[in-house]
Image 1 (tube, rainbow, N blue to C red):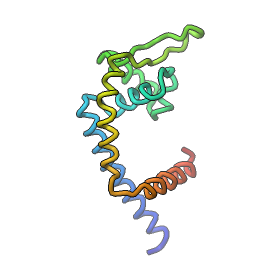
Image 2 (image 1 turned 60 degrees about the vertical axis):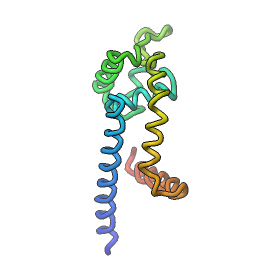
Image 3 (image 1 turned 180 degrees about the vertical axis):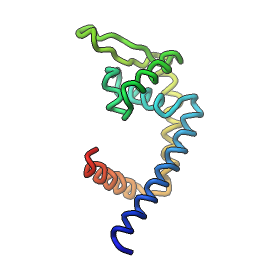
Length: 143
């Protein structure tokens, strides 16, 4: 097989794998009543603490309009709140509240196990190699 054809095959296999992983991830998050974007915001706040809303999109790859919508939905669900910065009133933080922390403490271990199961056919070393290779491709494309 020519190298260009191999690259095309790699693209098809990668896209099919990404679709399968995304579908499984969406189904997992749906069990908790959340969209992938909502889960990503909660997970970030749960593990990294309060974040400026303006920065959330960059951290989880969403547009500012989408972030506002997601934060609104999570706020209505009672899982986070907006908190104004005391030093700069223009900055508003997304802050996971106690109900959100309790929710994530309950569901995150299940989610972690689900993700582990998606990749259980790979050895530890294969996972490390795959991470390194995918990072290299992403970086070469300017990500």
